[in-house]
Image (cartoon, rainbow, N blue to C red; front, side):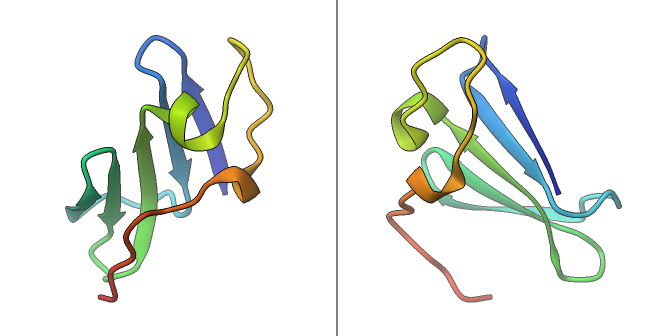
Length: 75
């Protein structure tokens, strides 16, 4: 797993698998799930990350326990 933060876009991307993305499902205005050709989750994008994850510095330590999704979908 790899977590990257883009401060200009205020976006976090969590890479779970390094293989290509087949399709993306938006589960809210700021959250998208990327699925690979194998049907498994390959990545998660979180926009407005400072709001959702409580980020307060330009190069934050991201603690995923702070993330509280508002909507969960079963695939």
